[in-house]
Amino acid sequence: MSELLNRPALEGVTLEMIVTHLSESIGWEEMAVAIPVRCFTHDPSIKSSLKFLRRTPWARQKVEQLYLQSQTGRKR
Image 1 (tube, one colour):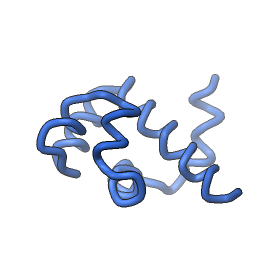
Image 2: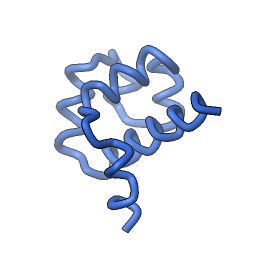
Image 3: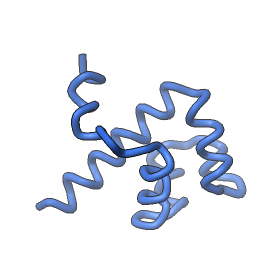
Image 4: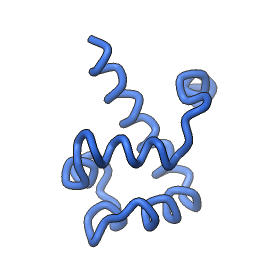
């Protein structure tokens, strides 16, 4: 159910756009604190992160939630 609620806010936003935005706005270190996965903690890159997130639905969902939280924070 929550997945359906998040989709309209993410419509038209690619995973690459999300990862790029987060890496530029909060940085890899903060991303690793929020979501402790190897692609954020050890030699992080957009390419390695996209490969991992496309194959790991639970991690992708957490990244999408982090993105939505960062967008909500910007609007205030």
